[in-house]
Image (cartoon, rainbow, N blue to C red; front, side, top):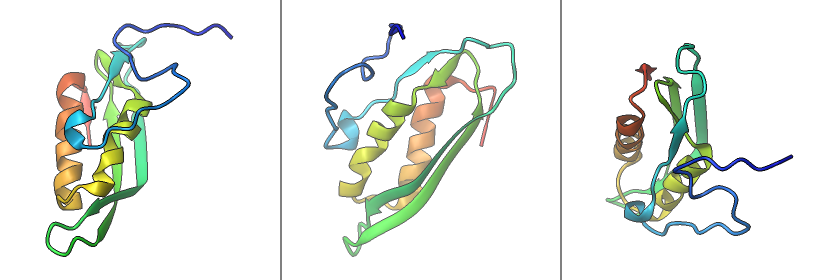
Length: 115
């Protein structure tokens, strides 16, 4: 199978993965929706989301689900995984992380509909 290059995707196709150590270094990537006139759902489930409680410094667990109908762009899944990776070492509440994650990811995507 021949690999296809997609403009703007920098995290795919490497033999090694560089994990961001802080949320500021993580970035979300997107690619053009090949079917922008079709209304279909894309869903990402992140059932093992963790962060650190800012009060007790104990692990805080959560489940993040992203469900959207793409507009012109689609969220690239590897970038989402790498975006969420540093959450386990940071101290905002899980609710704050999940809200910030969707705000960050939905802004450039301009989904037709999201939940």
